[in-house]
Length: 411
Image: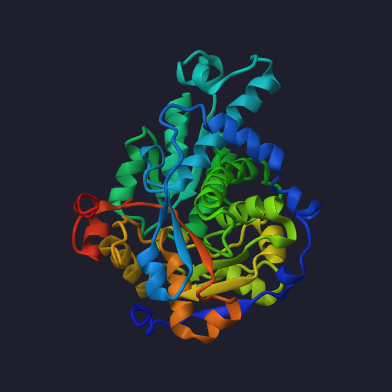
């Protein structure tokens, strides 16, 4: 099993600050805190269709990789959107409307009253927008449709037509920008300023932090579910957690939830990125936020990001012990490994951006030196987050060799 990824090079940066970090402090609480995370959990838990996503045990893979256990948080079924981002964008749209109702004296609103169309004077004058590689935009569009406001979504040049159609299916106007993701982010901000729209983004920058904080607090719901399920199944926390990078919002949300739960005894935490879009890895090496230039496109479309989130950085900079990069082929191999199942493991449908964390773990084990640096071995209890299912069904079938339904039927 460890030979599967042996040919895939990884780069590892060991962030010694994390080993020295103490309790979750004021700099981190300025971004994410338990009180607002609990509010998000309570709110999202009332939405129709809500259910915790499964934490899948993979004992066959763990044995083959020489690990104590591997647990995979499968977000492929979240609210029918097939991605964890359903928790973030839609929640931020709701929070935006609730704040606007309070500001204008419209009166208290609830998700149910908004969804029932009881506040047309409020919702008819608000248009939300964002840039996306697919999943976040789908969540924002779904939230806008659910709660009754207009929506425009900007996608960049390489976003697939299937992902574009999936966003449009929620009633959003979709605009394709002829650049990369970060350029589409700037386009969305410019158009919002010109038209009086509100940007609902999962990345943050100077002067724009409130809405991304809502998005990230939504993501903590996923982390909270994983924490509770792992404690129940394994009798305690994982020893290691690995999460995909992107701009850093999801990784920071997961790290924060475990940090304030376990303090200095929290699991060792790693961030895994595509080698061509490793803004967090480069930021860690530089000891400051770094924006990448040049080609950042990767098959892991949800991770084609070149600018580190302003909000995520204080949490990851101090709390993430490992920053890894992997090749695209490593993530694709893990998609097929999960679909096949190892040693009797249940088949899992994982999209191309879902597997980076697990790919980083397996590549590190194959590397040997990286595994030793990270303390990965037979006593390790590893938790990874499968952040999407087959969000592009045609691409999934091309990569895996059969469609997602065929994989699920084999379970």
